Amino acid sequence: MTERDRQHVRVAVIGSGFGGLGAAVRLRRAGVTDFVVLERAQALGGTWRDNTYPGCACDVPSHLYSFSFAPNPAWPRAFSGQEHIRAYLERVAETFRLGPHLRFGHEVRQLRWNGERLHWEVSTSQGELTADVVVSAAGPLADPSIPEVPGLASFPGKVFHSARWDHEYDLRGKRVAVIGTGASAIQLVPGIQPVVERLTLFQRTPPWVLPRADRPITAAERWLHEKLPVTGKLRRGVLWGVREWQVSAFAKRPGELRTVQWLAKSHLHRTVKDPALRAALTPDYRIGCKRILLSNDFYPALVRPNVDLVPSGLAEVRGSTLIAADGTRAEADAIVFGTGFHVTDLPIAERVVGEAGHTLAEEWKDGMGALRGSSVAGFPNFLTVIGPNTGLGNSSMILIIESQLNYLVDFLRQLDTLGGKAALDARRSAVNAWNRRLQRRLERSVWNTGNCTSWYLDAQGRNTVVWPGTTAEFRRATRRVDLQEYRLLRPPGAGRRTPVAAGSTAGTTTREDAR
Image (cartoon, rainbow, N blue to C red):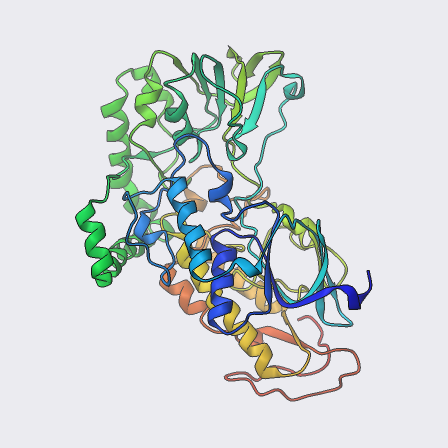
């Protein structure tokens, strides 16, 4: 296919979850209509489309888990289920008329930077296009992670991951093994326990679990939020403020979490009376080191007579026999993996080829890192949503997403102000300085000092996932693009120009050394 045959767009967005749809809305509101949203599936929704396991719900309060520019006064519960969140995203797409921009069934196979033309060449399963700017909103919870277990391939029964639930397979009357005790597992275990013959839960590490303050939102509350939108904003503001106040305990003074840990222990003791089971369910690390889970029915499900807890990880499969690392054996007809996702080794990174001809995965071989969670040195005009060190341990990721969308809009504004064909590439010195500051702040956080192994840490033990501050601080950090943190690229032969950009004294050569 020749360059002339390819469609060219101003912006290509990857993914149609909260990040991708949010980017689409913000682009339209900023007057940018020349963009596409590339989605590999046949429907929108991201993680809330993929995760349909029994009991799937959000652990962030509904009124905080929505866009500030698209409030939903009709949330049915304090903590909404998967079906309600997906319906909300579909309404957002319809309300903001995103349909013409959505390209379903377009899996991105490769992104390659063209330094001659200063644009990205995008290869998808449905053809090719080019884009001035690429926004990767693929998200860290997009690709399931299944551990390599000896003998798993020869298991005669059904095997699937919680994020790829097989609704055609009937679990009723089956012996089911659930692997893992993370956020998905503690929801699906109570969801399937009443219908299976036997449920065996393989627990490598017990989680800290707090009660879930869930309840139906009354018709009167929903009417009030619809007729007086300020009441919904007030509710959201209170939820946000409480979580902002909690940040210092997680990031600076983990010792302050002792009271929260006592509440979690009390929750366990009230529900589980068997001392041996209770001991197996008691973590040996500080609360907050791993994500704190919320559930009212996980512990009650574990004490039912058809449930066995194996306090050890799955080590081997021999036929229909599952063998734990401690030697415990269990028979199973089906295996459900609740083992999380590729978070610190994002598969999309293997498909992004930057300025120097190497992939983003190669750039991140020693650990992910991005300037303000958005820009990577050597990958011009490429921005990530929910990028490195933007994750939250206690609040709503929608707050982080909206801040990164502010950064995206200002990034495009800066390119327009510079004029002509231009690209911005994060200076390596700026990326390194940003990440050094982050890692210093994380050193005393509970995520780094809580004595646990979590998905926040990469293979080198480096925390490349969590943001160690408040969401208000992150919003301030991403309000504007500082051109001094970027190299300005012009097409070869364009010569020297002097752009005028607010608050910037950035260099202006055709191509500057990466510093």
